[in-house]
Image 1 (cartoon, helix red, strand yellow):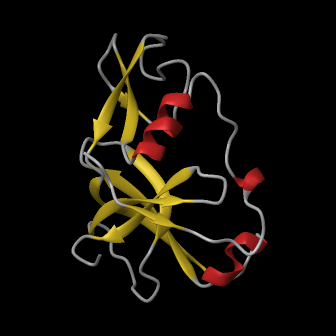
Image 2 (cartoon, one colour; image 1 turned 90 degrees about the vertical axis):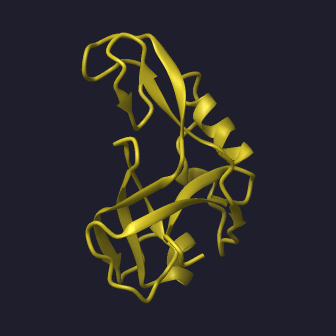
Length: 147
């Protein structure tokens, strides 16, 4: 499934805000750039995991394959930032960051695009990808039906 991609312009340079691309996480970052959301699946115990890691935290296997996620899910938890900790996000204050429980059980953290709502646990969300300067994408979320 191809997810929508929106562009984000920063007042500063966000290069140091994202983790380094490694052999373990490269398929994840490459898929995001194509508009796909992937997660690792252990070939030994078949459990999905996120964030990307070289060893399965459930069984210890190093054998992994990648599975596509639909990007549909719900709010698991949330926090609203009223203070700016990084200049790159100053123009967003106040903003909401959620932990989204996606349809296959994986939890991912990202910003909620709607700024003037009070999220409620269980609210449906859809993943949208936000392309940052430099070309890398990160997952953000929109309330389902609010695009």
